[in-house]
Length: 553
Image (tube, rainbow, N blue to C red; front, side, top):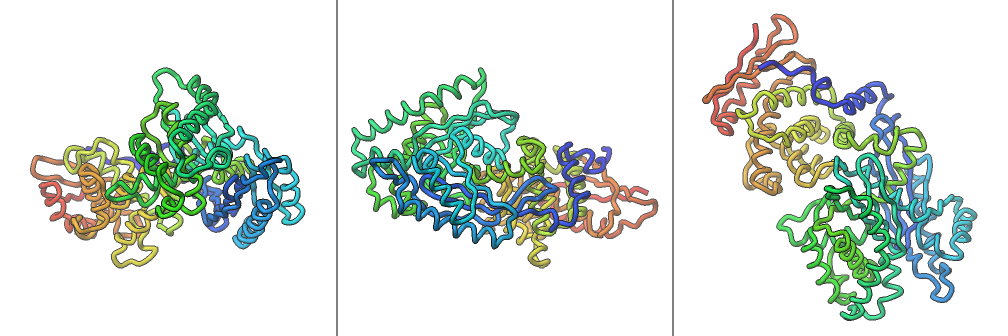
């Protein structure tokens, strides 16, 4: 079969080629990074996020995330104003967050205040106090603007593909419901129903009596009906939207749901929760006292007080939307503030510019983070994908889904050298496993890490943590096959400079022959031949085929 063309021309799409060009043209790595902080002044909590923005890649990584329970939503029951105690808690948190942000040498702090402040009669007075005493400018965002920022945050960390997505954010004072696809936001809604608001206005006894629970569910349904109707009208015939849930409430419920798994996920971003599992979690929570809920590991003291109203909002919304599953997103308004800052500073062409290349960007970002030799990593990836394309039905029987995982693993397979050259494949597994790979599901993330883990040395063993973490037999088969291809590709790259121009494959029922074409006439490829021949036993064990190597004269 003919050899593959150069990697960047045939494998990477237009977006990825552009990313590589941007990286090549950019200034040294440290000069491409810009630090910015975002603060979300919410109804229950105030959050700080410090992000490192990569100018060349048009993406960002989170350097610091802090949370302070300020409870601004505990307003004066008669006037609806922010209380002096709540404002003092808010001011103290903002002072501390400003100091933290400055210590990270951020060039700007962007701040948004949401429903608690915008609805309070003295909300603008509070923001003026923040300006006078702390020197921070706070944007008082509207409900639709809050929804837009949440949408940008989710968009930055989750590929929408061709399917429309419903984004649900349950805050303390409001709930945002967004309908969007990979090209546009079709509906941005904000409803004045939130976990803190419902707990304050309706929960007098805890656990909630059954009749009171029914009333609360009816109230939630009535409040959300206009928003749900709006998004329903804008879902096109034949479309099945994906529901994405983000917020402290959704994350806490997702963590509780994950305790049913034999192996709970390391990260909740991208984790899926069925309606049946959600219902079981809600039924557990509503009969517990606040003290009993505090004993649950994923729930802190304040969350224990408000999680039942929040859970009922989530459950009722799923029923109204008629969806059977939700996907969790750890990114929301704070990350949306960072994306919005990037847009306003010309670091993104538009809000969708990173969507089609979100996987490539996050992999390249991790490669840079761990000082991977990008030229050599791309060379290994080129060889790996050439082998993939040439050995279908021979060295692997993948349906196509493993190809992108192989590419990601090839780019990152040597990142463990950042820690130690000895047994670096094990370090690579750890770094990839615990790193951020946006756009990949939990199972895909595990497979990428495992492919890198098994590209050298021994084959998988049942006792290995990397092998045990794989969820299905099919996932293990994919890892075994892709790791074998990566092993062969890495064996072709033993020198700093390229010596193998292309390779071709011939196979029979009993053997597979790799023919190497050297970069230059009469170039010695004995090292590469020896390296490949050292893989013979493993190729035979995995595939039952004999490996033969031939050098083109």
